[in-house]
Image (cartoon, rainbow, N blue to C red; front, side, top):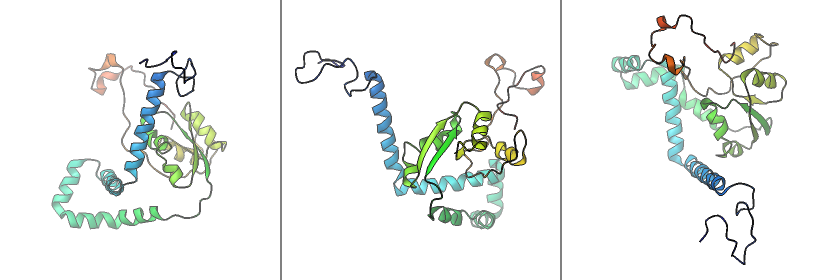
Length: 226
């Protein structure tokens, strides 16, 4: 039986394109179906109690990691004071349970139709995947997620109120609020997508030059002034 076209089937029209009727190849169709199946699986998993518990524990672990960036220091602290005392001490300055309970409280939405910009890099994943996974819809939001070409452009679109929210480099909201490089405009940070994800990346030809002392004369590209 032919895989793509069957010119000898009297019960079906002979379409020289995908059998679904759209103008794309069978391989593209299969990739789209596989992606939708993966998203469906992730959506179902995200609605389970186990995933909710995993999310809460992951958030708490991330916050503790932020408090103790060096894991050896975290372990020494726990050994010195004990697990119970450590949890109480951290909860006194970072009430995770209360914050999680607050996150579950739902008030009236100020705006339902939102346009959110992002730069296509890894740390934008939560903003991007929340759309196909239905997380925005679950909160009653109709979100248009828009890929944007660069940090200066995405800043300008926020300043011009073309976007309701956007993916930013962490210093950018502070710089914009202070008027550094643009007119001073107050910005609020709603979430932090990652921590300590930055790196100084060398060209492959310099892979053996691990010591900064060997970098004299190098030119480094910076994605944005702030």
